[in-house]
Length: 421
Image (cartoon, rainbow, N blue to C red; front, side, top):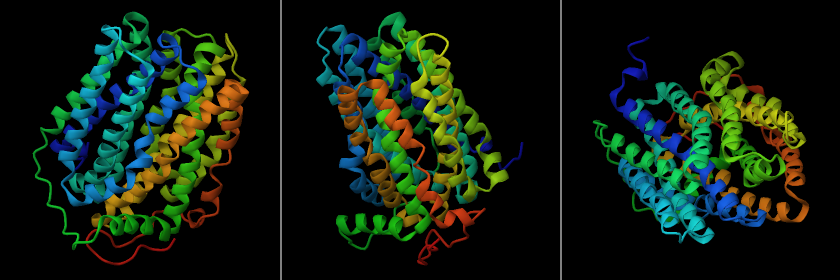
């Protein structure tokens, strides 16, 4: 192993370990909280859609001003505050359940407030990484972090489903609260002092938000990536809002079996993380941004074909292949954005992209709930999986289609505008 590998970078190891633990807890939570709503609290399709919307609403409501905040302050304290806040909020779920006062409204409120803290953490985290490891090691750093996320996507749902069956979904939520607490403690072990943010010259919050959006709009390839990702996230959130109902009611699976299905489907994401670097090198990182979604997205159409019994494997297959493509896409997409964006704008650009690409998710949750109530859960999956197959079109119409490598641009403290590719 090379001595310049991030494996030997003490501070990156703390960030990586913290993210590994918190992502594990996140995927446990993403399994047990919907199970809690669907099985214990007997939520309807519309209520499941509302819960999904609550868990992503903050990206739409505070995404842009969060980018301004992250560019004005040191990023690690923001990440610490977010982790400890999420731990405290999620602790209220088992406490309320043990006291027999847990309601769907409580669950939705916790989901919304956790989403606020997640917005703060995610924007700060993606903006913090380049200053921690340096731009030449961004691909390695993002690959390692994505590997942990994908491993958590495999292990977390299985553990969450098993715990929900053994001790109840509410008690299993305690695992997620503890994971955020541990992640925050690991962040405290980072030794390197974070540089003071550059002065913003007294520019107002609205002007700074517009500056981040302007960068995304002017950089043609980044604009296409953002539009494609937003369309994909909209469709995927509709799918996720109905996923637990489809597994528990249409496919008649127990909580433990639901966890197993989600864990097996997460293997695709893990394989994607392990092969993302090689895949990008073989195809070309710029080409991988459009080619992977083009090939992978249509496979989701096998998901609604699944039936109780052995045909459940079709659901696993469709989810696993989609997870593979999403993971490879995320690694090259985030690395592209971090590579071309000036450091002084990175927080606002990350927030602008998140505002657009994640801001559609509460809409997807609501749409999933409405469609599920109107045409049924399985029909809703047919609609959303068909839509997923078309989400790569903006990428095919962008300049990325003619590129193999990322463009060479001047970044960080230089004032040159981005290349208009």
